[in-house]
Length: 337
Image (cartoon, rainbow, N blue to C red; front, side):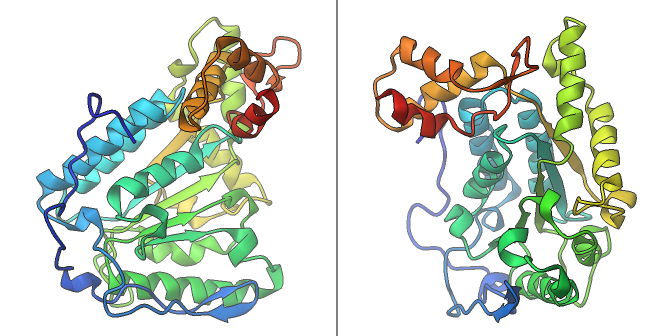
């Protein structure tokens, strides 16, 4: 929960139950092949509250963006460029009542730098229930698309799943995690939903949000950040244009990446390629403090230092950036209490 002195988050519809918009009366979608077995999400005619971003005027939707911006500023450690890029995309998207295309963002960076954290924060502010909302759809290649021999079936089911859910509710979000583990060629089946066409398969999909999450490109981001450090420049001085170019090239040319030779990259269908920078020692210490506060534990500076020091850093000699970001902070704290 954010301090009231820092953020005033206005809850839409707090005065009573809201009538769902007609577009969202039947959330859910068609069956998706999970691990080679066809599954189907079944929902009652009204299975939950409408997406917050569907409610009210563009002004009220921008109020949701303000809450997200405050949350990012307060709780996201060491990623001011991420906050800048994500808020630019979200604000532009929400204030447009009839966007020309869906909002498509791709998060790239090494493990523990905040990619999944930001994506969950975003849907938490825009959708009641966050990741549990019937309008938020999360895909993991290991869980949903594990077998390469079923890729054609996965393609068909994924296309139907997205089409069915966008027909039920145009203001839906689709999160694709671990794109670096996705079978190459699979993700291109959703290309028709990402472009500026008005209608695809009879469905208006331009108010949807698509987020791709990947460790791929992290090596290039880390190298660019190290080059800045060697030149005695701040890591935040990284060129977003250069980073986007390096990331796109890396994932497009990597045969192990879900974006290998992908038309999504080739056709420039991603609106924001967002680089998550490696975290320095003082960022890790801030993560430790945040985790202690969240767990209701006493913040002791000596212990904060010990936890931060126990994490591996790179390069091996200089030890400037955390090798695992803040990913292992929570588990390491238990060793010091």
